[in-house]
Image: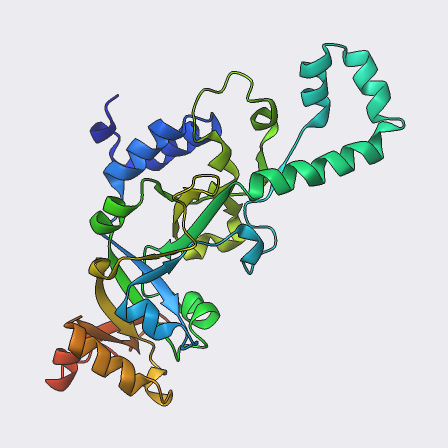
Length: 283
């Protein structure tokens, strides 16, 4: 089946490709079905002006993420050792004997190797996540930036959606790269998170940390196409500076509001608000 014919089944096909280490094929599917816009939530920290004015995007190690289980994976060492030695009886005795502590040390070393092999920047499909505003935008007093995905993909090769699962990803085959020819196979663990985080609707820029050109910060101001103010942002004394900056940069400005009839967040443009066309409660 051609990628364009996958339709609503595209994500299942994408997931199957990732689980079988066919990252190039998974990327082509993700690229075809990628959203037109992606969003990133911010608080007014000391870098906020740089994020807006210069379009600075930070590429982080998973060790800096707020979820210590992010990109978590497990290794079936019995399978790995059996593949390496070809002696299942020896491996079984080893695993049940003196080898246990050695296996734990090996796991820690392998985990450091895999998790340090890439750098990530995280985005969401929506600017209307109540939980995201609460977690990443200082209790709705921060802001959210909207990005043109085509401009992001001009800069970054791999922009892919996160797969939310009940169990961590089995990365056993990556250690020996048995039967794996895809050069991007090592990023597989970075595409999996617990289902607890599925509300984030996350897409990730992923860069190979071993490449010389991999940078910790990339500036791409032309990708920013909108700024969303949290519905409590006006209580922050930085909000005036942000609005002035948005006007200077000619970036459309929106304000989040509470829906009239539900817990949902909605937003209105500043121009509509000036005309009295609010979609919800302002405060």
